[in-house]
Length: 113
Length: 114
Image (cartoon, rainbow over all chains, first blue to last red):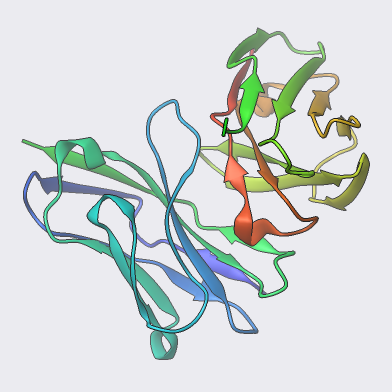
């Protein structure tokens, strides 16, 4: 069965520290992978996506993610976190055909000064 | 280009009532999908409409229904509200039917059921 696991429900980091949010997926075919961010009271904003090619993907707001097929992972990273990065982050997997989409349960990020 | 808009942004209802939420997609987008977001269940797919027809449906009871108009605007209706229906309801639009890889999300409607 298809699924997305975000093992960390909540993460707290200091401003300026590096960040890594974990995402593992289970999918029978080649997955399309996404990271979304949701600020309080807002909808989902796409940070980055991976369809094919270079396994290191650059996104908006200084985020990047690396696709590791052998580990079924698509972890999100940022070298230096800003207070405005405090939000909920969702990993998602989609089908190449575009007609299936599964979200992880999200990781809540707190940034302390 | 304007993004996906949802109205109202906040709603308070009581158990047993019904509610209608509205979603206007990005201009030119013909597909509208609806999601329910709760702390316990995360984001769950409700249904998708394309060309005024429901094309895909998640695992929700029949109390949840929707429709789409000729201008691609969509409404979602929940009848006989239950406390567990309290959630953020998100809609997303895309140009092609069933293309969830290219969907854009609205800000959501926060429904509270008392």
